View (cartoon, rainbow, N blue to C red):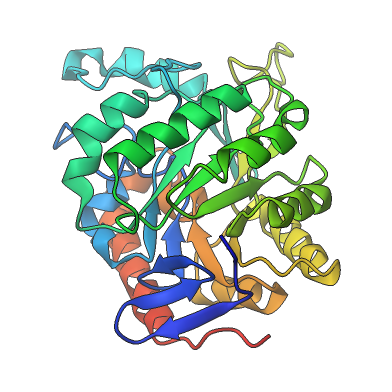
Length: 335
C-alpha cells in the first residue's frame, strides 16, 4: 500500500488519509468505546456512558479496544453480566485498573478483551453503520499474522477504515521493540485493509515511524498513553494492580503535540492521527497545526470526572456532537 501525505476531502465519501477512508477527521481512540456496541443496555461495560448521547456513526471512524488472538482478562475481566448487587465488587476492580489523577487518567486494563473470534462473530456485525478501525495486539509476529488473517477472512476489503497495530502498550509488561520490525515486515503485506501503527512516546517513535513507512503502513497514531506511576501516600503501595499504567488525558496533550511536530520536522510524511487530551475544537486545531491530519477523542472526552461526573453525560454528549459539527466543516490542514 502506498500512503499519500495529508488529508484530502472527498465530497461523496468523506476524508482520505492516503488509502484510509474516514467519514471526517474526528475518530475515537482505542478502548474508550469498547467494541462500538454493548450487550447490556444499562450498564454498558467497556463503553463510556457518554456514548449513549452521541451517534457513533457520525465519527470518521470508531476504534475498537485492542483485540488479541485469545480472550484475555488482563488485569480486569471480560465479564459484562454484572448484577446491581455486585456493583461494589465491580467498582473495587475498577479502582485497581483505572484511576483519575492530576490532569488525566491512569489505566492498566492489560488488553482485557473477548478475543478476535468473538469480536468478529458477536460485535462487528452490529456496527456496520459505523466506520471501524480494528485495534490488534499481540506478543509475537505470528500472533499479528494470525490476527490479520482472521480479519481478512471475516471482513471484505473496504468495509472497515483500517486495522491499527498496537505495538506500544505499557500495561502488558512486554518490550515491543523486540518484535516491531518483524511484525511490520510480515503482517502489513498480508493485510487486505490499510494498517495504522500506534506510536508510543516512550519508545523511539521516529525510528518506528520510519520503519512504518518502509514496510507499507498507511498512517500513524500519535500517541499511545505515557508510562506512569502513582503511589498511595499513606502506604506507598501502587495505585494500580500492574504497578505501572498508561497516563492519558489533558496531562499528555503537550507531549502528543511535541511528538507530532517532531515527526514532521524529521521528514515523516505518513498521515498522522493525533490523540492525547483532546476535548475542544481548539484542541483539534492545535493538533492540525502541529502536523496531524485527523484527531482522536480519548479519555479526556469519554471519561467523566469521578463521583457525579457521569450525571452530566448528556451535556458531555452535546459538546461532542457540536465538535463533530465543527469538524465536518473544517478544511484539511495545509501542507
